[in-house]
View 1: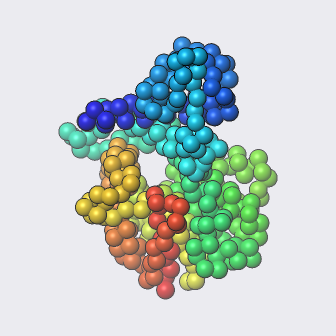
View 2: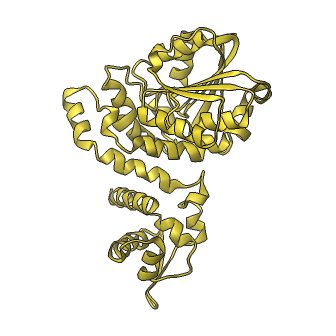
View 3: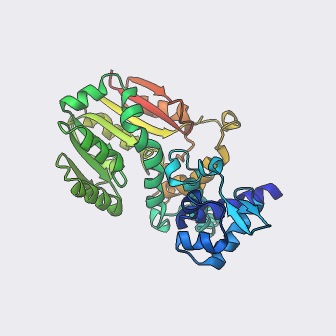
Length: 340
């Protein structure tokens, strides 16, 4: 339990190190004093010094008491800097601070039921976008899309694509830039996310993509798309069955649905050896499940698992469902579903 307390504290300090750019600054420095590190990162020396204390006793940063210098080794920098993506664990540490900020409201939900709405998580959209950028987006063109046989060729020729729950639109914008003959549309409830997606499209002058604020449970699309994608977007929906049903209706007869979601089992005993099982159940309890319950939803949670996901896909109307994983990605599963 003492290790648990120290680990939780280090997670907060790791989040601070990521957000302030301290890890990135130290990765490019030789052994340096607190003043030199603070100057490089353009930060207050007293705060940097105390942060370094936590990093040293936590075994993350090396310290030489003889000359009063600190060093972030290349081996540790390989999992703590922005250039290390997708292996940057420091980016994920941000979730701990975000979830801790809503603890009082979660405790109240334990007592009274209900949920905590999206609006209570002001940085979640930003952190999710960063998370997605270094995991899903980074692997999208070379690894994820090729999981569907012939899909890359179809995109190059020109098809209609819809991304449901598109967030800030990084994945959709990337596909739109890569496949200029195809047409792309992204829907999300978040006005902030949609605005970011539009801004990125305008920045790159991408004319084959559009973004719209829309409730995923009421798509009202009929056989308009050859490909529908969702990236980590189904399990926290208020009515996921309605979302999946709408996706079935939106697909053309030969269309494909590509769903990325958390790799796990629907049964807790099968997740005992999951490398980040406690982390994912915590995120589920304190965000994914509760934001759904806040809208009187199903409250599936992030750990709804492969068994439940496959069952719901078939109930929605998909005849063929195949689940694939990538060798480098233990966190996600990729569901390829067709009407058959």
